[in-house]
Image (cartoon, rainbow, N blue to C red; front, side, top):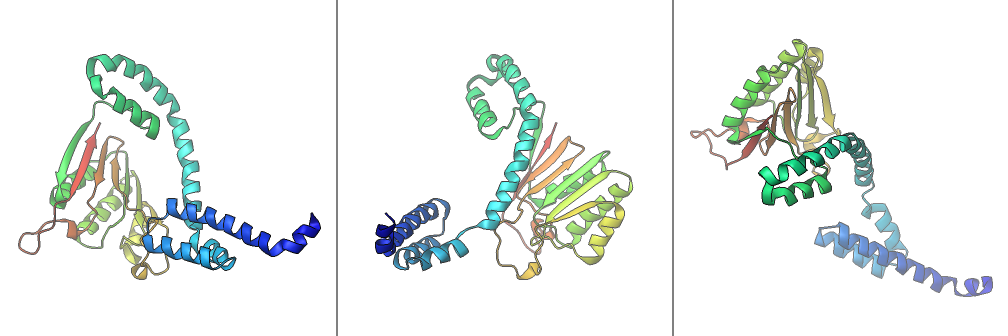
Length: 267
């Protein structure tokens, strides 16, 4: 056996190489959506034995992405476990509601509950807010009326009139003794120097998601935090496609934007 391996080691290595290459190609086809990258890696793996594998495992693996998502899955599991009791309670209530209210929607409710661990909630009011001029007026009113806590997470918060007003409100509410938490994307947001210091001195719990050395010169938009969420007192929520910036407010004399929407939930 040992003599056979010694005599045929090169051919054995070639077979192992192409078995690993086939495995890599299958992985690329299922995980990558960029046709240019797919074709490039396949050519390298097929026509450059050994070297192709080295190139693929050095540059073709998304180690950072895997690390981020593995860490996120651990946190998600903790949240899901904490919701298990609530989900069990909801199952009992669903049986009572099925005949009276849900009717043909019960299958969709159960699907969401099972696949996304997303329980049915009731007594909520949902409203669609069209464009920034409507959203920010409502959002700022709700923020000023907050009595317990404020949690905000945005991809873009610009250092302009709209962004400045939001940040000043957060500082004021933190000084009043409310718990105020703000998370922004390090590439998308423009919160620097004096404003960042003002937030911290006011008591705002500030977090910059995945900091980079030169945000303005960063071309890679992958792995950024594009969420746009505000939660006030655990009773009012805002989500949607409107970031915090003057650019999301229509000004007929100066410019008119395409329609963008946000949604507010109360309950």
